[in-house]
Image 1: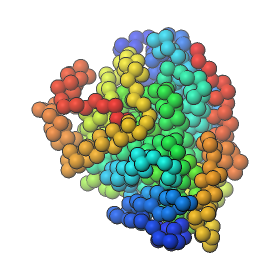
Image 2: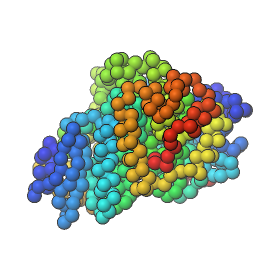
Image 3: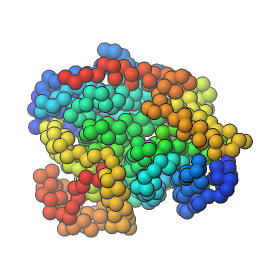
Length: 238
Length: 306
C-alpha cells in the first residue's frame, strides 16, 4: 500500500496529514478523538534535520496532554550516511527521536508502528522499533542490511548467504524474518479497513516489552527470552 | 591479556579487556558475574557461519560496588566480533536492565566497545538494541541513572551509538568514538570523497571523544586510564537528568540549536572555532587537563538535556 492509500483507509472522512521532504506529520479523526501520525515516506534516509522534525512533532502531542495515540508510518532508507550527519552527532538525534516516542508511550499516548515499505538500520531503530506495538503491511521490507552488503562484510559468497537465508530468519532481510524475531508483532490485511485493525493493535498492545517472548514462540530468536529471564533471576546486588 | 589491573592510574582503558576494565573500575574484589563463561551461554548462530564462539558472547555482566555503592555493570569485549550485538549478547544486557528495575542499584554502568549489530545475527541484534533502549528509559524513569563509559577499541558505533544517546550521562576518552555510520560504511556507500576512512585524524575529529564533549554529545572527557573512568562514573551518577518531558524538551531545543549554529560547518575545526576555541588545530593534541581548562573557558557546553 502507498501512504495515500493507507491514509484513505485509516481516515475515510479525510485527514490533515502532510508529507514534506519525505517527512510525514499530521493527524486524522479516530475514535471520537484524534490519531497523530508521523513517519517517513518514499524510501527517504533519516538525517539530523528529519529526526529533529519528527521528534518535535511527537513532543507536541505529549505537551498537549490527553491520550492521543501516535502512528509511526515508515517507508524509509537507512540513516543518512554522510560526514556532515555524523559530525553533527546523528546518534543523538536518532536516540532523541526514539526517546520521545518511548516517553509518549509512557505518558499515555499509545504508539503504533506501521512499516509499509522499506526501512533499515538506525532509521528503523529510531522510529518503528521505538513503538509499543509494530505492524507490517504485506510487501514491506524491513532489514538491517541488504544481503550483498552482508556478503561484503562477512566475506561469504552471496549465493551461499541466499541459500542460508531461506532457513535462518535471524540474519536475512524481510518482513517475515522480522515477524519471526518478534520485532514485528503483526501483519495487517490491506483488503480490510485499517482503522479497526489499528484500534485492535492499540487495545491488545502488551503492557511490557514482549518482543523476546514472540521471538521464542515464533522461532526467530530461540534463546533471547530465556537468557534475559535467567539474568533477572540470578541478579542480586553485592 | 591480563584480567586484573594492578595500577589503575597507569592502566590504559583502551588496551584493557572487558574483564580487566571491570576489575579496575569497581571496588577491589566486589565484582560478581552473572551468567559467567562457565555457563557457556554461546551464540546459537555463529556455527552456521563457521565462526568461533565465546563463552560469554562478548558481554560481561554482573554486580559490584563503586565507592561502596551497589551498581550493575555490563562490559562489551571489542576483541570478540567487534563487540557486536548478537542474540545472546543483547539479551544479557536487556536482562540486566530489567533486573535493575527490581533491584534499584545506585546506577547501571555500560562499558561500550561495539561496532553495532552483529550481521550474522542481524535481526536479533537490531531487535535487542530496540529492547535495550526501551529498558534504559524504563530504568531512568524509575530514577536509576544509566551511565555510559566509552573508550574502547571498537568505539560506540551503529546501534551502540543510539544506545549511548539513550543513557543519562556519558564519559568518553580520546579513543572513544561515537557515531552511527562508521567511516568505512560511509566510504563504501558514498565514496572516499565523502569520507576517507584512512584519514585517521579526520575520524578522530569527526567522531572522537573531544569533539563529542565539545558539542555536548558526551558529558565528561577523561584520560585513557581505568582510574579516570572510575572517577568520571562516580561524578556522573550524582548528576543524572530525569527522564521526563522537561528533559526531552530541553534536548529538542539543544539539538535544534546545534543545527542552527553549526549546520553549515564542513569540519569539526569550524565548529570548535565557532564555539570560541582560539586554536582549533591544537585541540587534538591537548591533554585531558588542558582540554578541561579549555572547555571551562567556553560558552556553556554542559547540559542536563539528554
